[in-house]
Every structure is written in structure tokens, then in C-alpha cells.
Image (cartoon, rainbow, N blue to C red; front, side):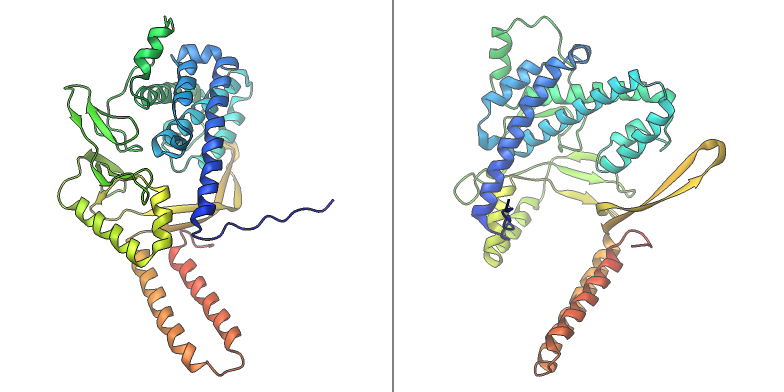
Length: 377
């Protein structure tokens, strides 16, 4: 049987990206309904304990249009629901597990690999130790928090649906309580909740409504529109401190950047318009770094005697901070000058192609050197 070779996705091809986006929307819609089925069938007792409403979640999915399933709010809600179902399953496994120390150690390793971009690791293992005696209570606390967040988000995705749905269905159980604390992952102000999918917000304590601050209205050139969100202020230790309304000339500066991208890079602008519908400004005094964890290269096992065996993972991880940013500009700038000079100096040389390959390999090696987050890499 001959295997058909799939063609790679063309870079910056808007039609190919639109097709991929359509597949993503369909998969997210199927995932939502599958999660609702699992909550109803496999985790019925835990669903009641945490006051979840999977039938209402399913109604939300049915009310949303297919194009909404690539919106950041809907995708974030489904991903958080997926995380909740995952931790409900872990909670059930922990209750049946006899060797809880081994289970806690393996679960710590799994969380360290999967949830480095979330607060789950800090909530479950704040000391980076298994601590099996405390894992059950921490899991319950995390599941309760996710249940509150998932329920609260679902109530404001489709305007008018909660009142009509709960009026038609006899609901005798209470729902998970709301949490009006600031939400750093969604960039939500304390006491405010986003209503609908366009970015308007309402303050629940006083009933004030803040309309959407559009940077680009929905249209042919920007399908879902581009809204401006609140500003997240960071501490010097790289952790978020508070969320404040975006003021000043931030909107004007973002508009100028958008226009520059549109004029200088039309293909990239089309991709940006298709994939982006909200911008959240970040304000940091000091250094804020952004890391990308590619994969685990290898691990070192060290025996700690009675304390057990410690595993030290060595990952392929790249970090972009203030220092590495300066070095990246320096490396790419000098490499560009060398390329320009060499293209003329080596133009007639028979080994021109080989020289350029070696030069680009050297440039890539220097970029890895300044962006790597550990010595082995």
C-alpha cells in the first residue's frame, strides 16, 4: 500500500491558514461536547460535589457559532474545562492508589513537564516536593477553583442564555460561586467580568458597563476585530502584581505598529488579523523574560538515600529577556553586515554556497548560545 505524502503548510498562506483554523474550530467543538459527556457519565459524583452544570455547558456550545470556537475566550474556557476533567481523573486515581508516595512523585514529574506555563504546579507542589499527605487536599482546592472559574466564564459567553436555560430546566442544585478577584491569565480587572465575545465588561458590584475599546472594528480586513484589554503590571521578580485599565497613548502606539506591519509585511498582517482579536499591554519595571520549553533532552538521577532518588531534567529551553534581547540584536546585526560584505567578496568564488551554509550555521549557533537557558545547551 502506497502512503500519500502530506504537503507542508505554506508559510504565510492565508487560505491554508483559514483551512487549518476551520479544522481547529471543529476539533474544539468536539472536545467541548466530549468533556460534557465525561462529566455527565464518568464523573457524576465529582460534578455534583463541585456544583458543575455540564448540561448548561453543552447548551453554551450549541448556542455558539462554529467561528466562535477559535475565539480566545471560548478556547480558554474549553482548555480550562479540559484541565478540570484531567484533575478530576487524577483525584479519582489518587483515591484508589495504595502507593501514594510513588504516585505523588510521578505526578510531580508530569506536572513539571506539562504545566510550566500555569500556576497548577505551584498550587499542587509549592515546595517542589511530592508531599503525598497533602496532595489530596490540594487537588480538591484546585478542582474547586477551576470549577468556579469554568462556571463563571460560561455564564457570560452567550448573552441571555443563562436566564432562559435555567428557566426552562428545573435546577435544584446550587452553582459554583463566582470569584471576582483579578484574573491574570485572562487579564480581567477585580470586580469586573467580560460579557459576550466582543470585549465589553461589566462591574458586578456597581453595575457599570465598560464598552469595547476597539483598535480595529470587525470587517473584511480583520474578521473578529481587534480590541484593547487592560494592562498587566509586573513586579521586579517577573510575577504579575495587578491589573489596571489601559490609559495614556497605548492605543495610539499599537495602532501605529499595526499600520507599519500592514505596509511592510502584508502577508504577515493577514495572518495576524486572522489569529488576533485582543491585545493586552504589559508594563514591567526591571526584567521580564519569556521562555520556550521545547523538550527534555536528558535527565540525571541522583540517589538521596532515605529521601529517595532525585531526577534533574536538562531541557532544551530558550529564554528571551533584556540581556538576551540585546545580544540577539548584536549577533543578527553583525551577521547581516558579514552576509552583505561576503555576498560581494565571495561572489566569484567556487565555494560560495558552501561558505554561506557555514556562515549561517555559525550564526544559528551564536543565536542558540545567547538564547539558551542552561549550560549544556
